[in-house]
Length: 249
Image 1 (cartoon, rainbow, N blue to C red):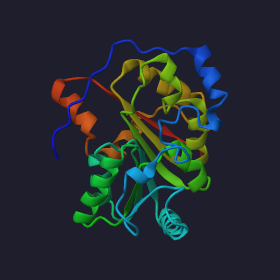
Image 2: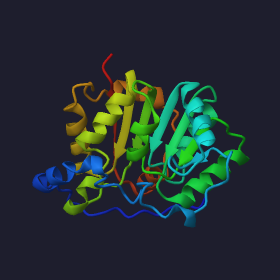
Image 3: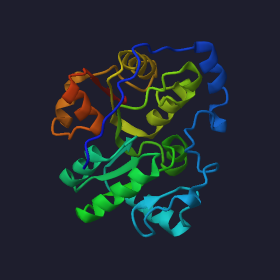
Image 4: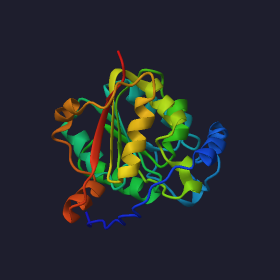
């Protein structure tokens, strides 16, 4: 894989509470979806590998393909990555844990297509991918208490106040994560943006279904391959934080 170069981003990370609350009032109308709402994106311009390849769009794949997906998701312990980028982490994890099933979301269709082809080349059969926005798909695709681990690693901070609704860590989406996680399941998050780190911890720990961040859960993921963003931060010496939130049992 070609090494990816990232922008570090500005130092200031702000929350405009009034503007955010106005946007969240329309959250369930799709406010804040990053062009990933499959009701709005002109997907016919961007072909994924054809069925039955393990790549899907919830509202465009055939009913038979979605049924295969649902059977896959229910057949083994399930881990989901939201914002997989090039897919280095999730592909490595799927190779290490063949007895588990994995689902990766990445709104950049080229990365999804490439990840699908990489997985097929490596003989990985326990990974499905999508370029839909996970916030649209997850509550429509999965049943409550069905996910063992969510990985949200180095999500885009969406720096500008007007883009706040696009941030993944807002209360309505944390509600979805809490609903879908099994009791005792783990939400694993990471960021190299100090202000976003504070926000992640504040929003998740305010939810009644999550216990506070517990660093003692880190050893369960000690063999995790770094994401491309994490590798970039390591290379330039940029600090980052990981969080581990367990759903109450």
